[in-house]
Length: 101
Image 1 (spheres, rainbow, N blue to C red):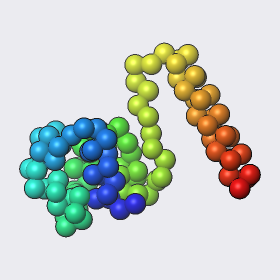
Image 2 (cartoon, one colour):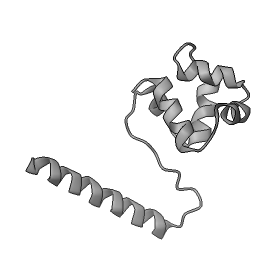
Image 3 (cartoon, rainbow, N blue to C red):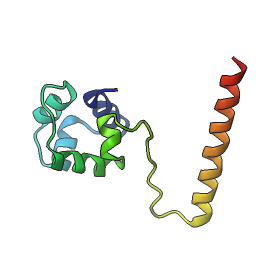
């Protein structure tokens, strides 16, 4: 997935308008639009700001890493362990489903 599409998807999933996202990272609405349309590329500083807003890596934003991260800040060790177990279970379920087809 290209950067512009990924940015738009993350923005919409977060319930942010282009204007709101721009305000969060210190650019205008039109700059966000240019990024989403792939008419302009963000600077490294803007990439870091975007990754902070969406709690994803810059590699994920750029499409270099397909793994999306989950912010676990504020969760107990028990909560984190439960989420890891659930993720493992879902990966195994998906592998099983793929092998059956």
